[in-house]
Image (cartoon, rainbow, N blue to C red; front, side, top):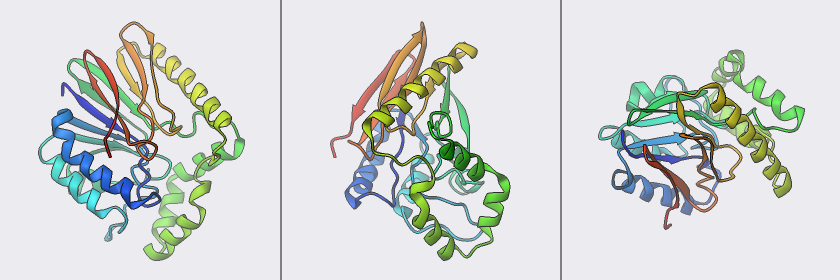
Length: 241
């Protein structure tokens, strides 16, 4: 790949229909913007890969991504709302999926993609929730529930899958902690040229060391934000929805 389109935090299923319609239009334009697509977590406000059923919310986006993945590489990381992708994305759609992180090649450089939940939470409750929801026993027990009951339960408690504050100062502080974590990770891995994160819904683009960049493209649900990365650099953009 030479131009990687990056988008994060759409939370489809919990946003107005216009946000999903804009995302579908965006997918139609991805091949004009680049030659690869990275969705860096929380594409859906909830997703679970059941053995025999597919969640109804966002099914048009799932189908469109499957079509796109037949033409260009598509990769996806799991976020705190849709980490439980299992083998569905790769087996059924040919989309590379990492529940925690992914490494991609851009030109001759390495891109590391991590959603970022559990790294910048200030409150102990947020860190505890991330530990519990990541545990294999949690997903195994949840998978035993009837999908209708399971999805109802998640919608009832969706706001507790992370710190759900809307306080700007708290969110800015979380974004600052995430940036510090990212810069430390880049220092520890000098072969990584671009570290991509999401989760905080705060746009960020820094170059903490020569030739190494940290990127948070911001949230699609907040202004239809995305980014395009190439070996030459990173461009922050907003889709004309």
